[in-house]
Image 1: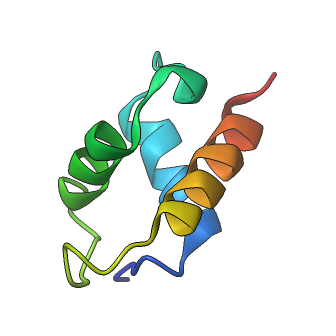
Image 2 (image 1 turned 135 degrees about the vertical axis):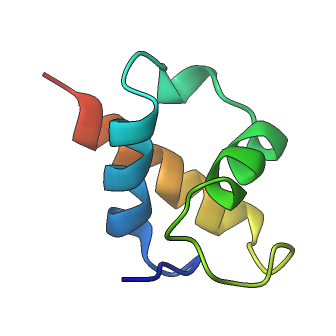
Length: 67
């Protein structure tokens, strides 16, 4: 399965698995972009994400990691 910038929920799940101790709210957009680019399942243009997409991914990751 490959993920793109539009796969907000899938990216959030993968980030939660790969970075279980991270607080998504403390991550800035450039760092988030790098973390996503490092996911093995990510297959999209590195510079295609908008600021809004990154914010949606962060919000979904926060929801995914909430107890």
